[in-house]
Length: 396
Image 1 (cartoon, rainbow, N blue to C red):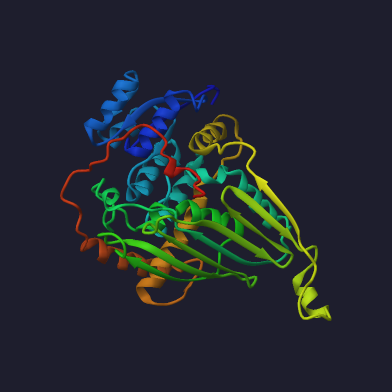
Image 2: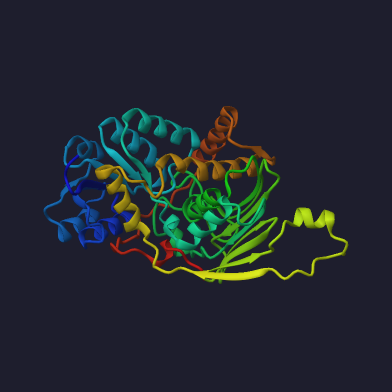
């Protein structure tokens, strides 16, 4: 492709899709040209007609795919639609950038990845919080061995507070048939992704996911995960939409020190020695050596959604790296699926998920979705076209 701009179509013009549209139209993604949009609701297409009358508008997804109006597709629909729409786009020869999560079921995302591999097209996922400088710093420190041998990760991420009005704002929210899950699939995918991106994937997972604890919903609004790693490390992950004020504290400990990300700072305590070795050789009951303390603050704003989309276009136009390859989306979804399965069956789940466990998860989910009671009112959500502060990295 020799064009200086990527011809992009957006499917789904709700809160997130309309924000992507306005990022493009206001010049925040200079290497992308918006050429088409699609939504099943005419009232949502009206925003595109008002802001960019030259952009093609479609009510039917199949018509968009067959139109030839775009070279790439950005999917911003409810979760269940991500894999089938991505597969159709790949089969039509389009590049794909999907919103998080990659899907609801690991088995569906596996097929989506297979379709991407067959197509040879670029496949990205909107993990915009990977552009956060402090998370990038934490990842580098873990991977470069600054902390020594990894021992523990604990993330308390409870600042996802939502009201009942939020869950009532969309006719797909808060149900297994609409969302496929709760806080782990809607609010915390970024955090699950960052956890595995920084610390790696565990080998076992146990969870307690409580449905409807704080809201009148079918899905979990509180989740507590405990994970074990092959290298002996452990991780704990606590999240909810029911606490206010919430906490965002990520603590990572190795045998040579620790880091804490909280309040917009990364704080580092460097022991200067291995506690594993010190514990065996010291002739004192404790340690009197004072760690070296350093703190870091982000030097620039996060590049966010516009940065992910910009780099997606660059990957297509000139072959540069993505912020997040779409294939990596299966990792956080594996954690979420395993957490639900652990809760539903009351057992520790081995990772990666076996074919049998994927089938068991799918059966459990299908049963719950079949009994789902969707709200009878139409969505009250009115797309604003703006990036909400709740979609950015929030330290408070």
